[in-house]
Image (cartoon, rainbow, N blue to C red):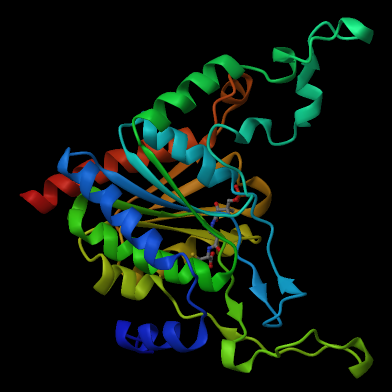
Length: 320
Ligand code: 9Z3
């Protein structure tokens, strides 16, 4: 089947997906960020992270969502920065965030104490109980250095529409730095949606009986991204399955269809400890050993190390 070209996807994006109010501002920020870091010779990675929300009504009461926590994207962002990249972090609002991610389950109020606690001696000063925030001094120091150096640009989405428009804007912004740009598409993006013109305005009424919805297939954004929006970039998509037996076949098929550089294939239940990086010529299994787990090594460190090396080779080939 012929792939829809950018023109048709651009048309679809305009007609069926509401443009987010911050799209223009985000586009300018991303272009300035890419320009600044590109001029310094730094590579820039666009990481997408977290799940998309798909509204069922335009005055949205209900929506379709998915499992993604954003942990893959948030931890990868830290490893890319350690590898010398500047990171555009296109993430789902309130999903896990670089550096704060390790404290996401901590109740803020349990980490704080009133000085001179107890009775009238309290000075009103609030102090941190560092035991409740393991490694906080180290993490805070790194976070502040990264912020100071302007190495991390966070951009938020919630809905599928926002994600699609912002990804397009990012691709166009990054096209200016050619092969120095990497796309690391770890977000879990819905395959299904209801086009804006077909969506009911008001809350669906339960008095109408059981709900039957028909959803359309989301256009394959990878196609125009690779062919038209950022044709020189190094592009990595992620493939998620729940059935291991079809995983590699699906990953290979994605590479054949979109002709990008790599697919990171993973299975829902084992995604924290096992992935396969598939390229047209190679297949690398990345596994966390018991020793790794003991040493708190994360799989994202291995994924990022594999891909930054491949990106380096890619840049050299493009220049040569
Ligand atoms: C992934 O496969 C990511 O590794 C996860 C990470 C979403 C599993 P968490 O956010 O999980 O750390 O909890 N992302 C891509 C998933 C996806 O929807 N891919 C599409 C597909 O497989 C195509 S790009 O069809």
